[in-house]
Image 1: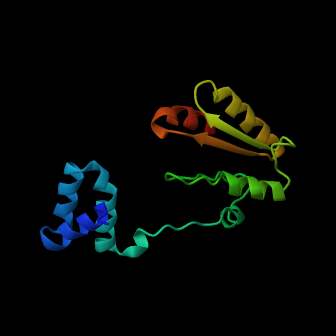
Image 2: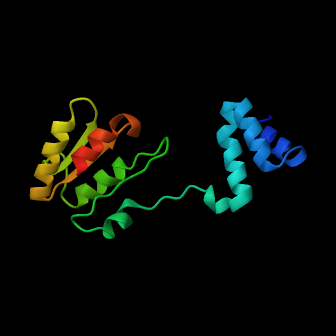
Image 3: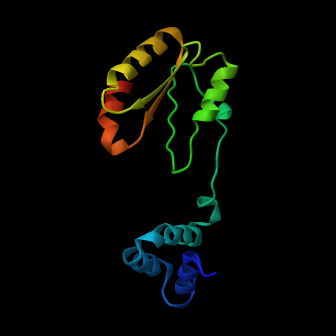
Length: 146
């Protein structure tokens, strides 16, 4: 079976430099842009820059202090919430006992987020603020976190 990645590889290897193949394919076929970029980065920088790496949340948590916010920049298909909830449960911070607050930011959720942050800062709770689209909700997120 011929895949888009094999087509990209064929063009890269036989006709054009990687850079020009990337530009050509990305402009002609939007759906192969990601594959082309991955191949370009791998060729130019090495495989370590395209390999998926994850750091267990427990390790990140050990490097923080009570006043240190933790931010997750996510890619499609990644959801650290299970790891956060699992560690919170071990530490006695659950939504059942009111010490773990999970707020999806969006229309009308600013007040909910602000209240959760106020309670959490006084009583040592955890707050997860989920932002579905940074472009749509950055103003809400920044105002809530400052």
